[in-house]
Image 1 (cartoon, helix red, strand yellow):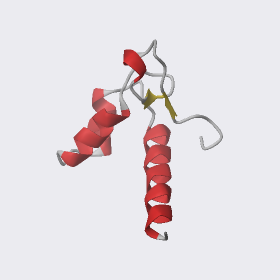
Image 2 (spheres, one colour):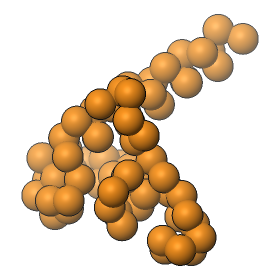
Image 3 (cartoon, helix red, strand yellow):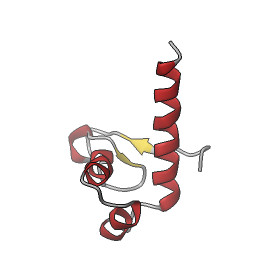
Image 4 (tube, one colour):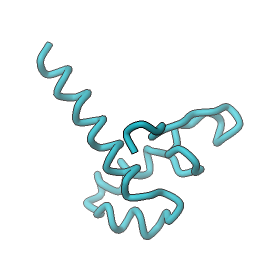
Length: 72
């Protein structure tokens, strides 16, 4: 999955909102679920077009960015 795009943004899809690649599901929706204490499984149940691998790859990329910023 890492060789594929995780997130896309296009003016033609939800006015350029970042979404999981190949879906119309905003990445912010996952973050909202997690912030509310919901699980990844809850999110995936509500949005079956998103694959678990996409969620994990997104979280791993976010973690890497945060850790990189922490080293500065």
